Image 1 (cartoon, rainbow, N blue to C red):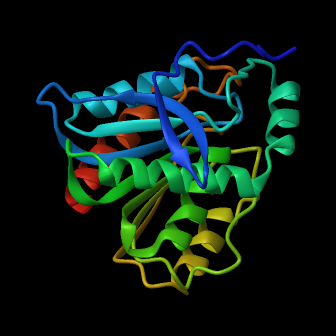
Image 2 (image 1 turned 60 degrees about the horizontal axis):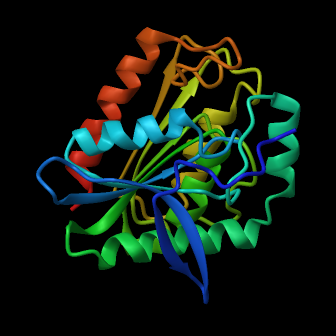
Length: 233
């Protein structure tokens, strides 16, 4: 069963549409920087997501990973699928909007927009929030997005960098091209769709699916950091 105890990685609480949400916040050594929201995979707010958040902080960002499940995590794929299916879409988008509000209101966040980085389920939420939040999102970086995608990209204003593995068994072979076509129906600043010789979750070095690819992960990470630094201001 998934861990139902409070997630020890939670270190911050923020307002969320009249309620409260929790997450993991990492600050850069300099104490201030552009804001980035990190959106979890279906496993929950795991050590991997906390590590990604820390890595972004080391690159100079004020990084926040909201805990969309409110505590539970799992390393079992079947349980993760059930947890993702039970997550109310409206609650997740509410909490993510609250995370954007929280970052943009912080005095240590120097940017007027935020970046969004997400993985698998989180990649789909990156696209949804970028479409819904318009000018508040400067850069959207979905990794191998899976889940409910936006029906309408007309509100999209962010620059988009999408990462896909060309051996990804979780999605159709034409998914990258289909996404690129859909994104062009909005008003993006830029669109980059990059394919790697890798499977799903190739950045996740916990390797829960056996698809971690160090070379693809390194290239995608370097491109992501550069993209965020260019577009989140």
